[in-house]
Every structure is written in structure tokens, then in C-alpha cells.
Amino acid sequence: MRVFYFTKFPPLQGGMSARGLFTALELGRRGHEVHIFSDPLAAASHERVNAAPLRELFDYVDHKVTIHFAETDEHIFYRRHPGGRPAVSQLASLALSVTDEHRPDVIFGSFMEPYGIAAYLVSKVTATPLVATHAGSDIGRLMRARDSQFLYRQVFLDSSAVLTTPRHSAYLALMGVPARKLHALPVPAPAWAPNAPAAPHDGPPTVLMYGKLPTDDSYIRHVIEDCAHIGVRTEVIGHIAWPASNSTDDATTLPTSPFVWPWKIPGLISESGLVAALRSSGNAEVQHHHGLTPVEAAAMGRAVALHPSDAANFHMTKLGLPTSHTEMMKLLGAQDARRELIGLGQACFDWLQEQLASGVIGLVPFETYADRVERVLSAPDEPADDRVVADRVTRLLKAHIPKGADTQEILRERRQAYRPSTASLHHIDSGADARIVRRVPMRYLELPEQQFHIIAQSAGSHPHEHIVAQSAMALLEAADGSPKRAELDPDDITLLHGLMSRGLIAVCDADLLPSKNEVPSLSRIEPSHG
Image (cartoon, rainbow, N blue to C red; front, side, top):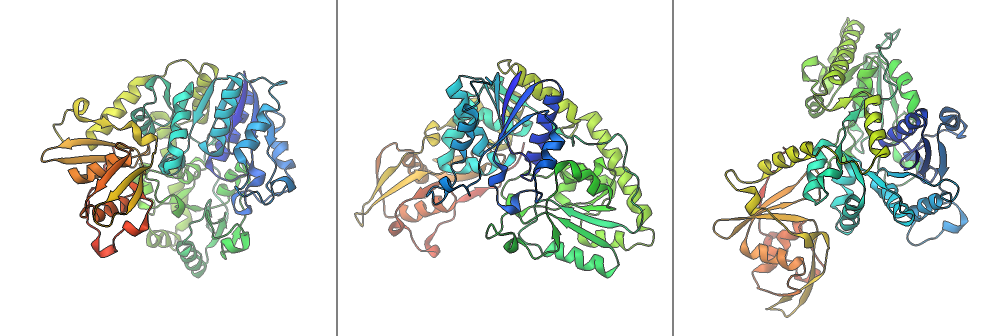
């Protein structure tokens, strides 16, 4: 089959970029014609592999796939464009320009902005089946933005199939995406994962830190300084994920090396004795968003220093790995540190093999993942096994609905939330008018004593829950545009600000907002995860 694949792609750095590369190569190896549409050359220097020329990439790909890269924003035609680089238009136009000669059988859109949207546009123009997939930040961050929600949801609704995760499948189903379209895929192990751990590194242990560096680099500095004190070498590869500017000079003053090509990662890891996994502060608001650095280190048989939450997430707490700076330095400073690191590395490798065999945490060999992707791309209209989705939806509802409640009877979905409209409020005392809009999709449960249990979420794995009174519910109803105009009582002003501070609505008139000491508290339920 001929696949038009819109995706992040090297030299753009990151896990989704590497997955795009290795997925395309695997499909090409299996005899499919794959065309890549991407725009890594337009990325800022801190977002891409600092390697030139691109010959190394093309030599590695070796004609297994055809690469179509969009122009950079340095081109004279894009300079001073008030809306920034037209990424969607570039990618869609680039793909449409080759459809006469290379008519696609299926379009594969990965990472919604801009690739998934460009894929959706080309799918509509060419009447070609679309298979959409997403990253954690698509669902956890971008889809929380009010003005993107309707289009993103429409892409999922109109796709022939959606490749998602077991966790996200339930939220997409609650959005209205048919369960038969939702293919819940496991997470693939690295495509380059060897069958045996790499030989132990000769010489003193080296601590490797790589990937998107956190904006607060104090942890990395602490590691470098303490390792130098005990004679342990450190190597830091990457850049701060979201620096204040796009200048590499402004990104960090740490002694770092630039990103490397994805296929060189195993060589880097094998030269280390310990991999210190980093957590990007840019993803702090995306719950359950974990990088795969521990898995990559385990694949090479190297010990990992983990953040405590990552250790629990990957079921690695029983391996005896260091989960704090103090524990890591104690391990590195031990008299028999090399022997202990080799033992922990072997334990990590054995752990990964057990996970790949059991599938308990959703990790599978890359070939197994590619099998599933190939199957869906080859027959996008084949229904998925919706039992997985149905089970996830049931568990999700049980986690968020009061005990004993009939979920089928009292869960009410407000579809207007996906169509943000502006409503007008009239303040009775001052005579001022304000405009309000809903910020996020919302469902609610009616409770006794005119209270409402609100579940505000946008298909991500982080629903925000609140208990509000009838007066607050009336304002939320008004924010949906029903009714288009509502009278605002004097006491509702502070309540309005409370709803705004929770991110439930946006108010377009600052004059109606009270001072901070007048803002009431809304009852907030901490989310639980099913």
C-alpha cells in the first residue's frame, strides 16, 4: 500500500520524532511505499539534532521511504508573515502536489498540530481514508485550549480509525468517537532494542543525562557538581525544552552537547554506567506523561536513576534503583560501584524482557507494535475490539461518579461545550454587560440539595472536578450560549470570578472582576484515575 505519513521526523528531536522514523522504516522494510511529510527544518535550533548536512539522515533511511520536507520560515516568502509560519498549509500543499503521481491508499496523521490537521485536510480533498493518532501532549495540553477543541474532536470523529492508548481511548469514547474506530495500541519498546545487554563499559562509571532538559536546571547542576567531587564523569545531551527565546545561547549555560540522531542513542547509553532520567518541566501539567528514557536504558542493560513517580509508573520499584539524588550519589561513591551498576543494569534488562513478554504495563516489542499499525493502515474500516474501550469507559465513570449512582441515568453530556459560543451577561447593579465563553467541555451530575458534580475535561487523562451550587450551574449554562443573554445578580460577580479562576469559563470584561480577596472558594475534588 502507499501511505502518506504526516509526522514529526528527524532532525526534529523527541520520542514522537524517533517513533515516526522507525515506524516509517519498518513499513518500508515490509514492502509498503511510504511518503513522509514533515517540517523539521523549520524548528528552532534547540528543538532539533544539530547535525549538518542531512546526508547522514538520508544515508540511514537508504531509500526505504520518500521524504518531503517543507521549507523553513527563513524563505523570503514567509518573512514578516503576521500569523507566523503557515505549517498546515505548507504540509497539505506539499502532499497534494504529489498526489497525481503518487495517489495514496491511506493517510496517516500523527501528532495533531500541525501534522494531524494537515493530514485531515488532504484526506478530505482526496477522499482518502484517514488514520489519526496523537501524542500525550495533544490530548493533555493542546486539546485543553478552547479554540482547538472542536476541530480536534472533528478529526477524530471523521477518521476511519484512531490509534490511541488504552488510557486515552475511554476519554475519546466519552467525547463521542465510536468505539469501533478506537484501536488501543501498546507502547513500543525501542526499535533498536538488542537481544542481549551491551557489554559493561570499561573504566570509571559515567552518568548520562539526555533529552529535553527541565527549565529549572538546578538538579542537573547538582548532579554534575557532586559527581565531579567524587571523580565521576557526567555527560549531558540536549537542550531546555522551552527556553525564553529560540536562541541556543539563551537556552542553557550547562555544559551540554546537542541532540543526536535517534539511531545513535544506544551507542550513547552503552558508553555510560548509569542513566539519570530527567523529567521535563514543560510536561508537568500533562498527567501520566512519562518519557521512555528508563526503557531505553534498560534495553541496553544500564542502571537508571529514577524520579519516584517514574519508578512506580514503570513498575521498577522492586529493582533497587536509586530514586533520589542522595541515593544516586551513595551508589556512585561506593567502593564497588562498578559491580553494583553492572548488577542493576542486568536487573533492568531482565525487567524489560519480562514486561515485553507479559504486557502488564503495555510495553511490547517494536515489531508487535508495527504489526498492529500495519493492520489498521491496511484495513482502516475494520472495527476495533471495542471491549477494551468499553472496559476503560466503565472504569473511568466509576472513578468519578458518586458511589451508588446510576451512571447511565444521571451522566449528562453538554455538546454545546464543543461549540464555544459567546453569551452576554447583564449586571443588574452597574448596568454593565459582559461576554463569557466556556473554556472546556463539561459533563455534570445532579446531586441532592441543588448541587452539581462537574467533570470538566477535554479527553485528556486529567479531569477537573468541582461541586457547585445551582447559581454557578446557571452561569455555566449561560456560557454555553443558552440562553444568549442572562441577568447577573450582584452576588454572582465573585462567583463568576471563581469559575474563571478554575478555568471553566472566560470573562471578556475585566471591569466585572472583583479583587482577589473577594474571590470565593469553589469545592474542588482531586481527580482519581481509573
